[in-house]
Amino acid sequence: MEKENEIVEKLKNFLKRNLVRTTVPKERRIFVYIKKDALRHAVKYLAKDLKFKHLSTITGVDLGGEIEVIYHLAYKGSIVLSIRVTVSEKNPSVPTITDLIPGAVLYEREVHDLFGVKFEGHPDLSPLLLPEEWPQGVYPLRKEHELEHLREMTSKK
Amino acid sequence: MSHGSIIKVPFGPQHPALKEPENFLFEVDGEIVVDVKPRIGYNHRGIEKAFELRTYIQNIYLAERICGICSDAHTTCYTQAIEELLGVEAPPRARYIRVIIAELERIQSHALWVGIAAHEIGFDTLFMYVWRDRETVLDLFEMISGNRIHYAMNTIGGVRRDIHAAMVSKIKKGLDFLEKRLRYYLNAVQTEQTILKRAAGVGILKPKDAVDLCAVGPTSRASGIKNDVRADDPYAAYDEIPFHVIARDGCDVLTRILVRCEEMLESLEIISYALDRMPEGIVRVKAPVKVPQGEVVSRVEAPRGELIHYAKSNGTTKPERYKVRSPTLGNIPALCKMLLGGYVADIPIVLAGIDPCFACMDRMAFVDVKKNKEWNWTMQQLRRKYAKK
Image 1 (cartoon, each protein chain N blue to C red):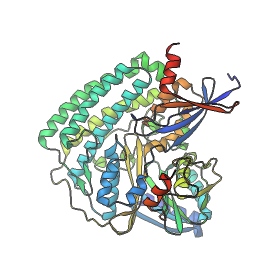
Image 2: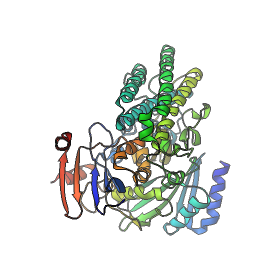
Image 3: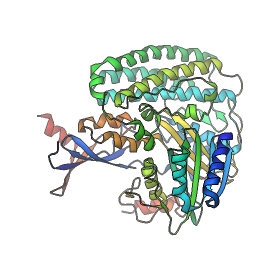
Image 4: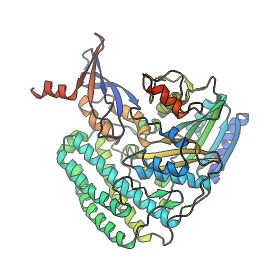
């Protein structure tokens, strides 16, 4: 776990107060909680300086009132660092990272589709997974939508 | 050479023969692709929502059904995620069986793909030969699990069936046969003009683009990027089994075929090694139904590349959140890059090159940008129109 702890130390020194919490649950896994404003700053540092070049995916999680956006970055394919920010459910937005990691382009659209998180500066946030006739403002992976509710909504023609 | 008119040609979205329908809107200038817009989701089944509504046991069956070809990769990823949350460890013999099943699956998946690639370039003889030989693996699956696909071997805490001594000799016989055939195909791929003419220098993905666009699996390994979850982030028994990560730097469709053929040969070695050194003992341990609060990131090298699952548990019998990212989604940005600047005629083989199980054309819509008119043709109408010419 030496390498993992070294990475955590470097991040702590770099992000200082913007870093909320880190955990290293086991070998090759790091979880990092940061403040939203530091996201681009942190991703840039991770991708350029710490060689976390590979973005495995972006996960959205509904925490109830808040939405968590988790970026799973990999170091040389080996260590997965999940860096996360939380945004309010009413006006969820985070800056895009597509200019820092071009591979993020579809993952951001996916989270936008399913959780309604707006990625500021993304070149094209048109629907990726949901059909064209999908009702506006309905984000199916949010907890407020029961399955039955979604079924009713989409079966109505 | 520009003729001044850019035509939009939608590809897809659905075809019953393939498991993952995708729609691509191509902008073509004459014969050259100038823009690609992926529009996926035609088969979006809401599996992640479904995970939240089912118990951890029911979700094994759901995970099995995310993919029809690499079902084992998904259950391996799922079960090892839940095992980590529970603090349960699969017994050593189970971990070896997981490797054996995963590598058998890789062989049948790659063989299926080589057949499809051959079909896409109009080499149907190769397609039929490879698929005939692929049956060997499916028969082995039937012997081990009772099923040719959806083998349902994994469960939380281990595997559901043991591989007995009597099976081992039969598996080895199958491996010997496959090795002969695969060496033949590897040679054919490198010498047969039908393949070389259609695949060499087509669908280029430069190493830098592969990294920037976060490509995974054989797609990135054919661009010289040596990433393989089995080696980089070992799971099951991969840390105890020596193997080579196959990478080549040809960056084209031909290299993608070669990498997959060599990987199949490597898989044979892995299976053979694992069969010889499988530890004795039980194949599963009991696991509790309730999963304590926690979160976990689980990764597996599926046949198509890095597969990642994220699980969050809340102390009940159902997950709070379950996220799945299959390798195909990871390779779509890289695929778009490969298609740009290529010929329209190469679209099918380049699309097939990432092994996406892409949707063939059921219908096409033609858009004339200037006249702003759009119309659809069925495959039958197209055939009628062009068959005579």
